[in-house]
Amino acid sequence: MLLRHTPEGIAEREALTIQPAKTCQPIGAMYAALGIHRCLPHSHGSQGCCAYHRSALTRHYKEPVMAGTSSFTEGSAVFGGQGNLLDAIQNIFSIYDPDVIAVHTTCLSETIGDDVNQIMVKAREEKKIPEGRFVIKASTPSYVGSHVIGFSNMVKGIVEGFAAPGGARGGFVNVIPGFVEPSDMAEIKRIARLMGVTALVFPDTSGVLDTPQTGSYEMYPAGGAPVSALLGMGGGASTIALGPIASGPGARLLDTRCKVPCEILPLPIGIRATDALVNALRARGGNVPDELAFERGQAVDIITDMQQYFFGKKAALIGDPDHLVSLTGFLTDLGMLVRHVITGTPGKKFVTRIKEAAQTDDVNVREMSDYFYLHQLVKSEPVDLLFGNSYAKYMSRDEDIPLVRMGFPIYDRIGHQYFPIVGYRGAMRLLERMLDAILSRQDRDAPEERFELVM
Ligand code: SF4
View 1 (cartoon, rainbow, N blue to C red):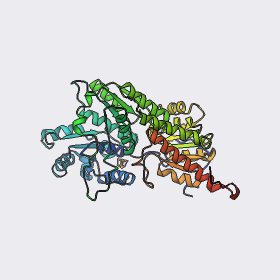
View 2: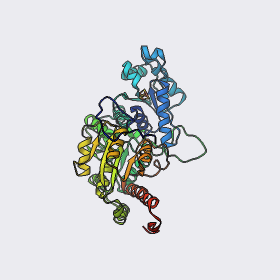
View 3: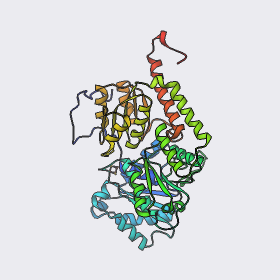
View 4: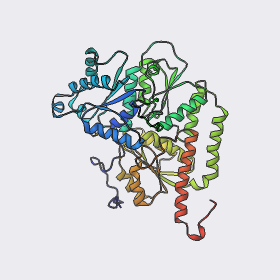
């Protein structure tokens, strides 16, 4: 009943956003930074921002997320945060001993106009950065963009901080996996490994935010792309960027800086998009082993067995653009009708990409939009299945539509960090969850005489 006042009629709005379909840029930057081994993210702003970013990530991944903050006060807000950041860099290296500090800005430090580049140079000159340690940075003003853009900006920061031109071309491929779960990053690595392709995946949060319970706390878990490997990224034979919004800009920057050619692919969600990744790895010398062909066959078998339940079902999607484009393609391949697609992240090509994936212009799609708008669309044209993060549960309950949780953030379920939705295995998991949602609804609504054991 939370959304009971949402009217069905749609009045166009320009200045007003109601329940945005995105979160804050630094959250994505912090997540990307955690994908470097022994890296401590640092929020250049007030303590409140950092507490929010950390809590959002901790609630989603159910793991402690550590980060430093420049702890702006009224004085720093007026005179700038250079002194705070210089002190922070010195303190963090001496107390917490990371290999890397990844600084991202916030609304406040961006509004003041702090020059983080210049502060980093000063920190190096004043020997606050020990030999062999690194400070990288990303500009992440949260009054523009979204958490996905923040992730993308920190990926560019990683390239800026580590990529060096020259040297021989190595026998490995850089893979930028996009703003996906640790489980998805692990699955992308597994597919490359199965195909015999040596891949440097960065950022890589597997082994960082999906760690086992050992009874002892590790400030820097075993996972993450090591600095020694990142320093060699400029020697990669090529780069595969998964997701044009989250990964494309970093891959292009690496191409510009070090002449590493890049190929930008959709996130490997669904059979078709996973095939594109597998083909890209084949073009780089990989072979498709029986194990992978077997998994693909299993995914296709599930689709064949259960296609009767998917065909013709209407879906509404809300979330991050790279996910939504691949998911739209997957659902369309299943014979489902994707009716409404909303993202809060800006991106001029989003509408075109969704229409191409849906293979029709007859789909309501909008970038930089909000939950309120999607709710109005769903009220005017109801759907059978809703895809979105935990915030979509209110609409799901009010409109009595089954929800398949995916994307960021998911605060009210566990499993997303351990089980992938990318690759053929990921497609199987997604199919299982979709089918469960559809059939559980069918069971719930079935009259006594139609309540079936075998479905
Ligand atoms: S939106 Fe801006 S002020 Fe708010 S938490 Fe994010 S960075 Fe801080």
